[in-house]
Image (cartoon, rainbow, N blue to C red; front, side, top):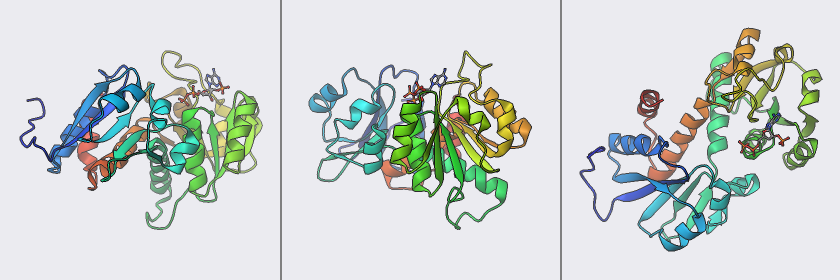
Length: 290
Ligand code: ATR
């Protein structure tokens, strides 16, 4: 009775995280604790799945109220939805699926909401801005490094908040394709070090440069970081990447990759339960398990 499920019954809302591997996932621990803390009659299971299509067609019973998706199934999950949120469609990947009362499964991508919320919170805390006065990203030059799944998510998220998006990628063609979809500008990663049309820009890294074990690498030299007021790194191993360390030394506000996961957990919790997320509890559970 790890989670002490006292109220399991026919009205219990069953959830799960679909991935492979899945044993390392913190999500079951996180959501089961969070559901319990607010008295929500739900459970959340780790689901080791090889083929998403096979799983959804064969094993997904109507009793399953919602799913999270993790590596490597975010793209495959998109193909198994009855309906897809427009942003998830544009990104080409889902991070969660919710069953509507009519039984249909709707796919969403809330990864970008987590990252964008973390960046907005970083901007607000550094400016002391009022949380109700619109997005602090609006009108800002927002440079996204990388054009893969996470790069797309950040670029769409910034665009949705009214930022002027710049996509910087090693492969220019991919930057161009993504930038054209968000009304933005494309540049190669190599040229980004000489790109500073204005001061106080916002930077997000979604490339794998600087990820463990290559912790001495950085996608942008320190010298270029002085033009940015806030730097976010989607990498969370290590938590303090070389990029973030050098940005901090340069005086920028830094936002850790772990904040992206924490904030998207708040959003998923709210989608699953319809209740406000117990934010401090979620932070505490994650802090205890990292
Ligand atoms: P994710 O889903 O995490 O975004 P991805 O789709 O594999 O991962 O995308 C990886 C991103 O990191 C890409 O933008 C990739 O650049 P390319 O489009 O040129 O491949 C970038 N990336 C990976 N390794 C890199 C490296 N050594 N230097 C620069 N960019 C790199």
